[in-house]
Amino acid sequence: MLIQLDFDGTVVEFDYPKIGLLNPGSVEVIDKLRKAGHDIVLNTYRADLNDGTLEDAHAFLKEIGIFPSKDRIPTNEKKVKSPAWNLTKFMEDNILFIDDDTENIPLRPCIGCHLLMVDWLELDKQFREKGIY
Image (cartoon, rainbow, N blue to C red; front, side, top):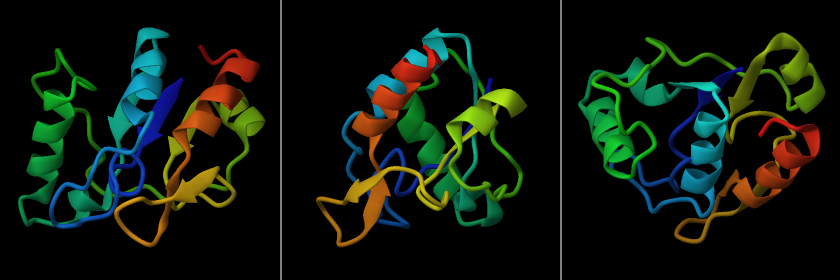
């Protein structure tokens, strides 16, 4: 499956243009997806900008091991808008969007900010139940 992975509010807490604190569970679940053979592409608004923040995100993702062996992290040139969260449909289409902007995706409060961000513990549960890994 192709995984379209957002960055701010998904992998990390919101602190743009800086890199926010790591969202608990994100690295572990993303690692499970990668090890299950899914292709992961970074799908972030940082790609829409020409301010160096995309390169900062790439460096961070390599440092924490999400893309350990990639010379170049696969990244959409422009942010692709995700459809509403529907894991069954995503599986049928062979494409999964993990993005805090995805309507109905499981969210939890951000610790370091006052916004909502992806709930990786709930995603882990859903992925295991659906046999995604």
